Amino acid sequence: MGNYLNPGNKGFEKIVQSEYVDKTGLIALLNKTIGTMEMLTCISRPRRFGKSYAAKMLCAYYDCSCDSHVLFDDREVARTPGYLTHLNQYHVINLDITGFLSEAKRERMPMADVPGKIVEAVHKELQSLFPGLDSGNSLMENLICCVEETGREFVFIIDEWDALIREAKGDPEIQSTYLNLLRGWFKNNNFTPKVVAAAYMTGILPIKKDGSQSAISDFIEYPILEPDGFAEFTGFTEVEVRNLCEKYEMSFGEAKSWYDGYDFPDVGAIYNPYSVMQAMRRKKFGSYWQKTSAAESLMTYINMDFEGLQETISRLISGEEVEVDTDLFENDFETFRSRDDVLTLLIHLGYLTWNEEDGTAHIPNEEVRIEFRKILKGMNGNQRWMELLGRSEKLLEDSIAGNREAVSKAIEEIRQTQYAPTFYNDEQALRYVIKFAYIAAADQYLKIEELPSGRRIADVVYLPKRKSLLPALVVELKWNKSSGGAIRQIKDRNYPAILKEYEGEIVMVGINYDAKEKTHSCEIELLQ
Image (cartoon, rainbow, N blue to C red; front, side, top):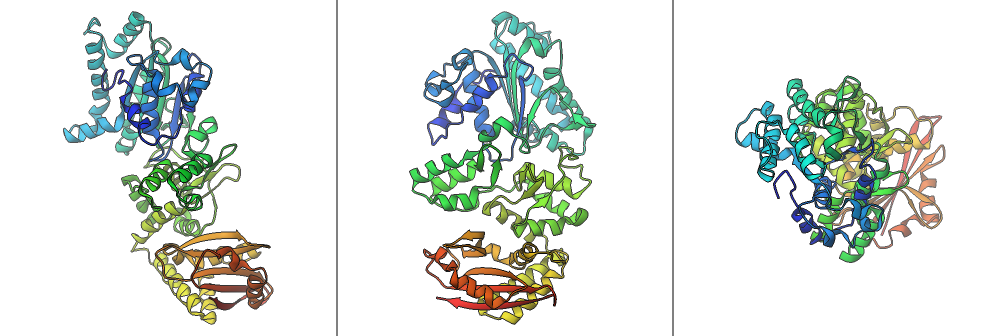
């Protein structure tokens, strides 16, 4: 067994000995591609969505240097056609590109040398495991010889394939050298059909575009925008999270609020697996999202304010969905020409979730919304944002204190900022402004829209987080009626009953907009 060539099954063995959610169905999808024109697969997912776990699983399954029956015979893949046909039947080349980058930095090696270092490392192990190979041959020549000698083809498993593309941003020469290495393996009629049984690459971004096309065009790509059959292996499904919550005696409702939000057609809700498992093991819900250099650099792009990007970010934080054109994104971290390019990057990073049918994006859950807040809190130089946040904090204070005139005035002032919709045309537009107005509540409240009650829905409910001493807020909106009518509706339809397990005070806020007078009115009552 080697580090890069036929690494064995120890990595996956450690995974299944801990809490493991069975995702071996992914293997069955890849088995279908072996021996076909679809044998090259590229999966792009956000960080912390199990890409490395999947790579270790595939190594254990395909590697001919080990026996992995005990790891897979009682798993989902064992019930699929072709299970035994491909189990431990191939040589495996397993590369984690981040490992090569770390070594290069440690040795102060130029990034331009990394592609050559990859070739050297694989070739050295190949010659060690098969000493009869000609030392004067190139790696590709000896891989062909190895297949001819052993009768076994290779499965390539490349984790974080795009790490060098990201690290060498702004240096097209290094990127080109690396992409040419991949082309030599996977787009070479004298090599690929003879050696490659299948390839599975994972990364954060889809394959870098070369002109208008993918630089390695023979790969079938399944990005987060269009995961197709791989959607259920993107993260944990709702059933899987329910089962984990039952096992660990944790609230499924809280898990859904914190980590749900990545929804795909025919699959439904997908949860961030890393965060879910951290919550289960620590017996505590919270934000386990890991800030990265890529995420921190987003502050730079937001500050550029492409086409009102800051306004869009504030709309997202308030809970709104925004339209995004994802087609022109260049699949890198440096080519940004518009607001949509930055928002598309946020989708790939997992900071937004994509609704393909509507062409819209929104913040998926509470965990990610907290990270957005952190990013924007670091934008101290953004005076407009800080003014909006200040108004919102004052509005929240006045709402809790029952200062209805101050609340009406604050909502009017916020409506006149560039962040909120200036012109109303229906109650939905009013709802957007209210969400903007209470944006400061994100730190101490969970915001729930259209929460069902006994006979209708409350427009917006702000439920205090566990450590908060603030009261709950139930906000009801009216259009060309009266704010008092909104309060009566809260009482008549018993909206506070939806908070029956909540033991604190409830502030009822009724807001009406008079379209003729273009004015807001407000009524506030406290319910013990």
